[in-house]
Length: 137
Image (cartoon, rainbow, N blue to C red; front, side):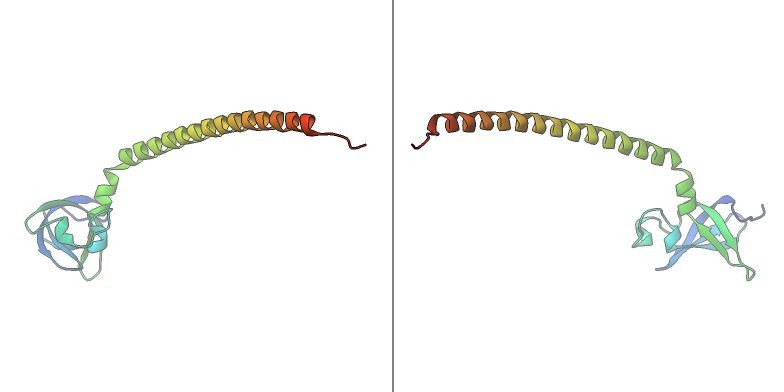
């Protein structure tokens, strides 16, 4: 099997450092997954995501002229989740519509109640003016 940039392959975690994880690929060559390429989530400790001996899928990001291989687990994870993102945004859009409808209903009720109270207030003040208003001669 030949290694190619963009290809997804499986490998075994052979070492973990504070900056990344070393992965032995099926060809016997070893590549590095930088800490920023471990997950789509924020990674503070790589050991929270993988441990030595784990088999992981990685995408070959780059093969340098000096033979070093740059790998990404994040790219594999991201490629596997496009449906979830679509569902999330559809739910968010639906929730936004529901929230907007609820808000409009609340404003409509408030306006109606406010108009009724204002009407009652006007009636009371007009009736008071009518009774208590006298001309001095």
